[in-house]
Length: 83
Image (cartoon, rainbow, N blue to C red; front, side, top):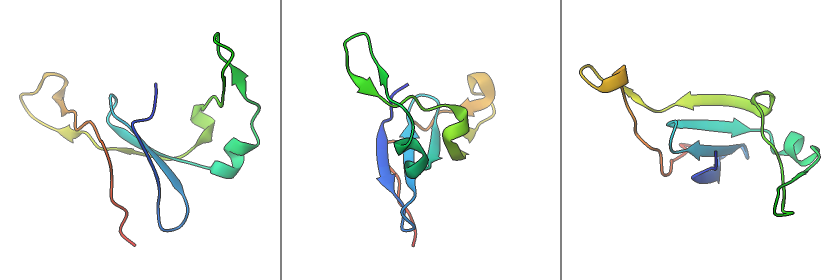
């Protein structure tokens, strides 16, 4: 799953919006920078993010009666951090 939006809040914490599942996650940049990178089949290096790397998860879908599955997907494209 690829991130859709990436930004830092006023405290310097990194937040990533994942459009399809409708969540925003907070990641520890220092911890991620220490992880070994993985090589893709194309030879490109990337950092694999796992559940243990998540500092916080915010579900931004809305509960909605009458909608299949009971949730209205908001598909976050950006966010605003109040400071």
